[in-house]
Length: 348
Image 1 (cartoon, helix red, strand yellow):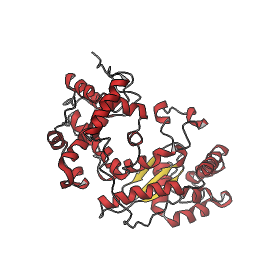
Image 2 (cartoon, helix red, strand yellow; image 1 turned 90 degrees about the vertical axis):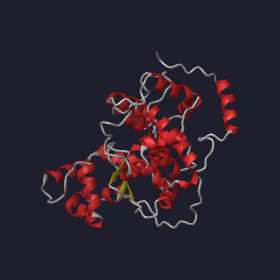
Image 3 (cartoon, helix red, strand yellow; image 1 turned 135 degrees about the vertical axis):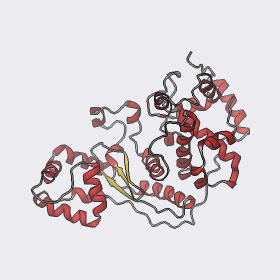
Image 4 (cartoon, one colour; image 1 turned 30 degrees about the horizontal axis):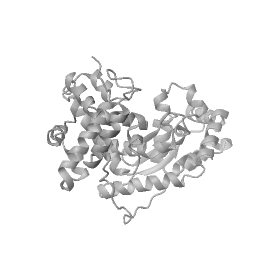
């Protein structure tokens, strides 16, 4: 039978007030640290501006001039992001595709729209600078990636090349009401995240995956372990932006996050009663830690990825228990089974 989350709004508020006195995890932010003394020379490189300045009357030479500035990123963008291929000769199919791209009124209009929305990226640069200073605090020996802005023609939000580059596709952050998003097959719950507030959380997620996310879960991984592994990512993102509202980090609305928090015990009970914790079924993993408008089997108010949210809670409790004895880097290397056992996470 479907789980029942019937806590009224009034009871939920009383429950929240009780928890406030006990310093529960999400109401207690012990991740705020002083990074003002960390020096980090950082600027966002507006690659899309340099790219779109190319002269269509001499496109090959013009693009080569851009490529000569940073050939590794240029080739990554041209080959892997946009699928144009490498530029090697003015008469190749690649150059013909590029000429069509640059002279397409729709593409030029998209570029102009991006420039209108992001003529000034100083606020984005400041927020990202702070997040990367937190990264340097926790991981002083790891290199800081170069951050560039691009236009991917709605192909990516943020894409990374190993840990060397992070490329932010600004055309994916033009606001949920941008008229052309409706022309694609983007689900509504995804379009809600095409707002500027999601840029830095999305960038930190890609940075995490560059260093720590496994390529794929082993066949022997239980769902609860996969939940905790995803919870590590959200904990990492929270440490990078401790003052960012939590719903932005996981991609929920404030109401969806409130739903999870107020029904935390019932959610745990649901997984327990349905014997899901140690499921190795691929579909169970997809339903409970994958993206979606809701989590299958739960009430329709339940957002997608509830399992990832539970994993985040478990990791938070584990780190609360460990205190200052465990660094963020050590958490990343801690097996999910250890985190589960030592967290003693059993909400009621």
